[in-house]
Image 1 (cartoon, rainbow, N blue to C red):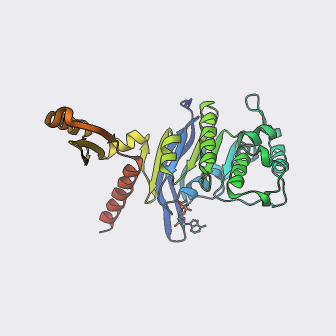
Image 2 (tube, protein in one colour):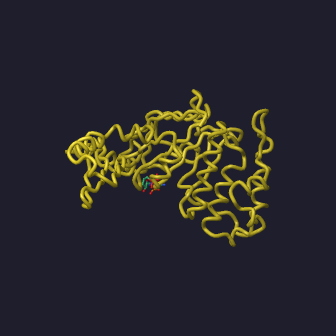
Image 3 (cartoon, rainbow, N blue to C red):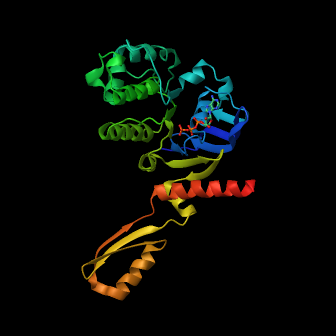
Amino acid sequence: MKRDSEVVLNVEGLRMRYGTNDVLRDVTFQVHRGEVVTLLGPNGAGKTTTIEILEGFRMRSAGRVDVLGTDPAHGDEHWRARLGVVLQSWRDHPKWRVRELLAHQGFYYACHSTERIRRPWDTDDLIELVGLSDHSGKQLRMLSGGQRRRLDVAIGLVGRPEVLFLDEPTAGFDPQARHDFHTLVRDLASAGETTIMLTTHDLPEAEKLADRILILNGGRIVADGTAEQLAEQIVGEDEVRWTVHGERHQRSTPDSTGFVFDLFKRHGEAVSNLEIRASSLENTYLSLVHSAESDREEAVR
Ligand SMILES: Nc1ncnc2c1ncn2[C@@H]1O[C@H](COP(=O)(O)OP(=O)(O)OP(=O)(O)O)[C@@H](O)[C@H]1O
């Protein structure tokens, strides 16, 4: 990632209420140009709501939101042309063919080209980039779920967006498609031009892709940092496994270095097959979400 100091997403005190349901209570975060940020949170936490407010698809109840220097509630066509959007689900007419649809969509971006960014993406290059070359002449109704999702990603990219929003982009991807998608995101990010915000429930994916992880729970951002920084916020337990005199042992410990030091002091060369598994993002995530929920219950009492 080639992050610079320019803030492209600025969210302060964002609130969203559906009827009497306060989904977002006070959401505050910033994203810099070129960053890849993952928004995590349990089902119903408000991830899609947040992303849709940033895209200008949904009006917020209160708070300040700035995307590429513009309030999404008042974004014009030129502002929209600088964004790429991949929704959780999307339907186009099933008779469109892949290549035709992308060429058609791309056409609308041509007048939004700038000195720096030539729009749209060349249709065939884009089709190759998302791995649909063998299906470019197919009607949409003939695509599998994963191929359809690759097309969704292509539609999000066709205007060479400066900010790309992806809502659960890899749901339904097979391992190859997932791997290809991760390479694509990393390539876009390393070119430094595209800022990417994505939601996912796949924690290894979040860890792999994100420069920074935001965890949304109870209507607030309860954690904001790299996977390592989040792990430092809570004392995660590492798992140590070893064998002594042919017997296998296993222990969870917050201080694996100290534990292993003592192990060798006690057993010396008799220790073999030593394995240390660092506290995973999954453990960190579950602890952060659990502790945010406990704090909320405490406040209600
Ligand atoms: N149009 C709407 N009207 C009323 N309530 C809504 C509307 N859209 C979403 N909600 C509610 O807002 C809450 C947050 O929904 P949202 O889809 O933003 O969550 P999410 O974090 O994206 O969930 P998931 O991980 O399940 O996709 C949920 O309780 C949902 O029922």
